[in-house]
Amino acid sequence: MSGKSLITSVCPHCKKDNVVRGKALTLAMTCQHCSTYFTRGNWTEVDVKFNDTTVPAIPIGSKGKIEGTTYEVMGFVVKYVRKYRFKWREYTLFNPVKGLAFLSESEGHWNFVKPLKDDPKGEKRGLSFNYNGNGFHLFQKYKAEVVFAKGEFCFDIFTGTDQTMVEEYIAPPYLLSLESDSESYRWYEGIYINHTEVATAFGLTTAKLPAKEGRGYTQPFVSGFTKESLMLLCFLLGAVLFAIQIYLHASSQDKIVFEQKFYGNSLKEGQKMFVTPSFELEGESKSLVMELYAPLYNDWFFGNFVLVNENDNSEYEFSKEIEYYSGNDGGESWSEGSKKGSAFLSRIPAGRYHLNIYPEFSFSNKEFTITLIRDVSNMSNFWVTLIVLSIFPVFYFIRHHHIESSRWSDSDYSPYDE
Amino acid sequence: MNQYHLFTCPDCNLAAKTKGLRSVIVTCTACGAVLANETSLDIPKMPMADDWSIIQIGATGTHNKKGFEVVGRVRMQMRKEYKNYWCLWFPVDMKYAWLVESLGFYAICTDTFFEIDQLELVKKIKANTSFQVSDKTSVTIDEVDFCEILSFSGEINTWSYGNRFFVAQGKNGPIIAAFIHFSAQKDRVKFLAGEWVPVESLQLKNINTTHVW
Image (cartoon, each protein chain N blue to C red):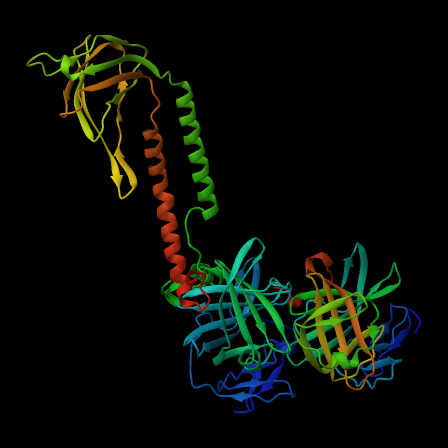
């Protein structure tokens, strides 16, 4: 800070003069000579010598631009929560127009915090509430203590910390913090800020800042898109896929080109196969479905099939087995398998064809029916595409859930414990 | 006191001319000497503390499309922070108002203090409790603090508290602000009502440029 007048304050411990950079704004400070913390108002007398020593990563007095406002670092406090054995560092920032703001740092993760005039929770009860379109949930509730301080402060940091209950609600990257005691009820809003942004703002190198460890409690789950945009994209792709399938289904001809019932006893001695009469497949390369039916009862049927193109003698070989069993067990009837089956052949060119059938009959069943249908839409393509499209979102949500549950493992109020 | 009253500071010889119609306190803006005091308060000569406020006497601005000039200042050094009550004069309406400012928050308030008979209740006032300021309106208290040092500068249109009184800051929603003054020595509770405003909306000019980075 710079200004017209020079205000000094005598340290009650070493009796040396200190220049008060915050002028009348400063109600407490540490001595620039002996590091004793003391209050300036004659209504309180606090005189503390710290055992701990911590060098602020951002020097006191340095200026940095955050969210378009130039702040000066006034003070630095190390706070500790005995209950959780958790320690973090807080930088008090000041701008004459915007007032106070704070940068808090823990394990290399930073939050930029400002006082809030609004009461975001209001009359709402419970651990969760919505504010500005974000769902906040209570992360931690604690009373902290000051273990180290350096610089100047607009209030006595001991009474402003030790007697204050803090409730922190998060909706990463956002943070809402309520600091309350009998005389004060103040909300603060914060946002996770990357350490490179902090370094750039204050003209430092990232090497000067504490190294990042683990995941910050307000650190957002970073991806190229939000959960909402991914769900919207999935919904749109699914809708497009469904529309394509509807179109294909509506435009398919489902034309029966051949149908015949076959009897095993019609095979002559030594004859192993049936040869169907020739049939015509028209149009471009399109699908052909063979539907197979056999009047099975606790029985099976198997067939090898060869579709022969009589124009160029090309062959399409496939097989199909169907089986059907049923019974009554302890008064309950049951069944498994089916008397029907189908085989799907895709992209069969137009031409004149016949089908060679190599049946394998059981002892009881000696008949089956073949129906050949041209240009049938295939649902399996739809399901395969849908499954492939689902892989990424499923992976995304699994990873998101893992990261969120890991974040909340440090909280006594985890929504993942419910 | 009539408008345009002329003073010459007996201590520093600075000439001063009042701009408002009904100033009850006038102090020298240079040295803090008391030039006029129509209240019953004992106001000692006291220089104004520099607290990095960008506002200063002589600054101008607009509120609700009406121009104002800052003509006076009451500074309250609280135990936990400070509050500046800047006395505004709106020449077109010939009215005063208060601009309450503290650590980057600004509220435009009524020109006079409302009075309520709630002394027993107000003595029990705590943060995050509701306090009835009128039959229909209550505010939620954000802070209760104690004024340790009071200083005046320029013209003040109304004031009735000396040193050492409580100030409770309350709100009703995100806009409505109330500043409630009370002390054991007074039988009436007084409060200012107003609204929080973003400083940009005031379009302040002639501000303290040494305090702008």
